[in-house]
Image (cartoon, rainbow over all chains, first blue to last red):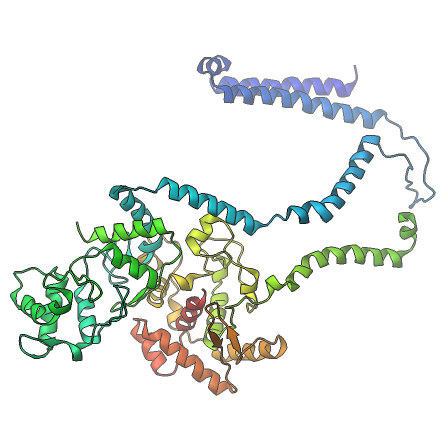
Amino acid sequence: MNKTVLAAIIVTIAMLGFTYAAVEMAGGLDKFLKDGDWVNMLAIAGAVVLVIITTFVVTKYVRQMQNDTASGNLAEESWDGIGEYKNEPPFGWAVAYLGLIVWAIWYFLAGYPVNSYSQIGEYNQYVAAHDTKFNEQHKNMDDETLKEMGESIFIVQCAPCHGLQADGMNGQAADLNTRISEASVKHVLIKGSNSNLLGTSMPMPDRNGLLNTATNALITDAEIDAVSKYVANGLKADDAAGAAVFAGTCAACHGADGKGMEMVAPNIAQMSPAMVDMVLNHGKKGAIGAMPAFTNLTEVQHKAVNAYVASLSQK
Amino acid sequence: MFHWLEKNPFFFAVTVFVVIAFAGLVEILPNFAQASRPIVGAKPYSTLELTGRWVYIKNNCNGCHSQLIRPFKSETDRYGHYSTSGEYAYDRPFLWGSKRTGPDLMRVGNYRTTDWHETHMKDPAAVVPGSIMPAYTWLFKNTADIDTAYAEQLTIQKFFAVPYNKELPMADGSKVTVALADTLEGARASALEEAKVVAADMKDQAVKDAVAAGQVPEIVALIAYLNRLK
């Protein structure tokens, strides 16, 4: 028997032996059969087939190298004694090669330009399809689902500044668990505000325009301190000093209960979804710093964030 | 024909050149298309922004942060509109980056603010829990190199016709002019004016003092650059 064939048989047996050993170490064929473990069965079958095919192919080509002699007409050129045959290319290969050239010409001139594939077009189609499905799916959301969606958007879009607990991360951003901080009230009282939380351009005057009707004088530093604390603590009635200043100075626009008046002054007792919406659309600049507008959310997502953020301070 | 080419080295070289040049044309020609011209809204960097851009490059921010938003929904949801070719018209070199260890920064100016960057550069984990970005505290101490940025501005204005001191149309219909000073002193002064605007929103007293004294710390230049990435 030929040495090469003998070597191939020995290698095949050895490798199949290794496969058998590996299977035994993993629990044996019986176990796989009993478990109905098809993935492992396929892997074993694959290994066996691979071993046999590999040795067969390698043996074939090794023998070909040993036995074949080249034949055909040599080309005229000789490069340092190395010649070149002028044999016909294999028929199948030639057909595939010419076919590919024809296809390339078609693709270059007609296939690509006429199909006019565009990455942006694919993106636009994908987004449109996604939005349609998304809007359909979330057409009638109950409050709970809305807030849940709002929370997940909050984590991605808002938490980098407002923190996962929405506490503003040590003054990095507004603490959304309360309506307004003492520092912010003070800032607004002293400097006025044109935050347009109502969507109208009715600014709040600075301290030179804030008359305390109880004393009939401009608001004083002490009164600012008192009313800031009162508003930041949620307008609790037991803070008599703050309540008095509020009634005299702020209530005229913000209402006796601080809930604001439409087209006149925003609610400073509670967050409302509409207010959150305003801030998201227009951004905000206040005591802490500037917040950019967030306009890349869809309508449903906007609604969800509004509902979630408004709910934080109303627990 | 191939036998003939093999015997004629000169024409062989010419043919090689033609074949390779064709491949080059396929790569190069699209860059002359209208889509690659500066888009409406693109404007060249001001002196301080360009200074900050070099701080960005010097600290190899582009090693971890890309500036290229691909047209996939997952990316546009997070970073904003996908990038277009014409947006990079004034970027030399472009900072597309090749790897995102950190997030993309192409439009970071749209959703982060001066004070956020300030806190983040001092202690990234303070605002981004679990962040592996190192703190860049030296940016608060080093003084930014305004002069080199100004030299670059003059160069690109002269050789690449970058439109400084010219009215440029913006997306909302308004016109914006990016000023370039005539003298080095003027450039330093205008960079300082820009720096004052940034420093006003910062909390670090040492940085505020430095800007008030006419110095521009690197952090101010970097934030000015990041804020304009929109």
